[in-house]
Image (cartoon, rainbow, N blue to C red; front, side, top):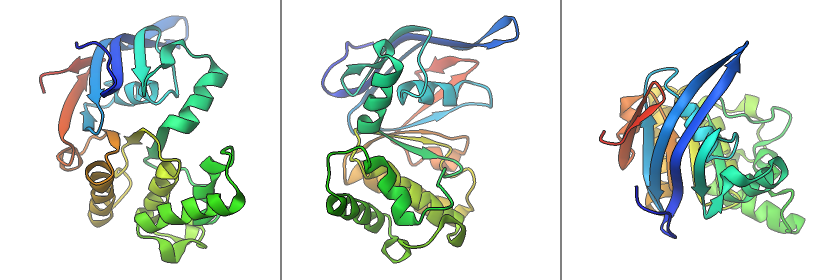
Length: 231
């Protein structure tokens, strides 16, 4: 492993994670070492239960490792408390989930506005940022539609707009095409490629779909909590 540097968005060293199941501790990740450079598009693959989502959640600051060092976007997030970690996430990470996680009672525009509520911006500035993000994902004509009025692919594009509206360092995507038909999946993957290639966003995507993984610039495999760096 190379030492952490300004060109690395993710530097994980000897990361391990386990969970309690009754009186037992179940290991999920074991001694993970990983470096992800700025502007990379990385796909994490592996069978169900291999630890892919756990690793993604650690990188995104949704969970903390049991041991090891984890530096993301220049911050040792493995050392942060819950409040500081939440504040860090809101600035540095954009999340894209398999099932969109949109609020059904809010319009597309209102869903995209949510991450901006704690930013020191005027209402007009927040709206402009949100409209720009929706335009980028091709949904300028759907800003006042509710999630239930949108297709699955359109909902995921709203979720991508919400993820990028704060201009984060890192985009993390957990099975972003897992609930989509092939045509919608290709649209979403094309957007991720565009965000990576044209806008320089670092993207880490968990997927079980080889077709989706081929869109990434690098592919790694997890098996039983062990990362295969030679894949």
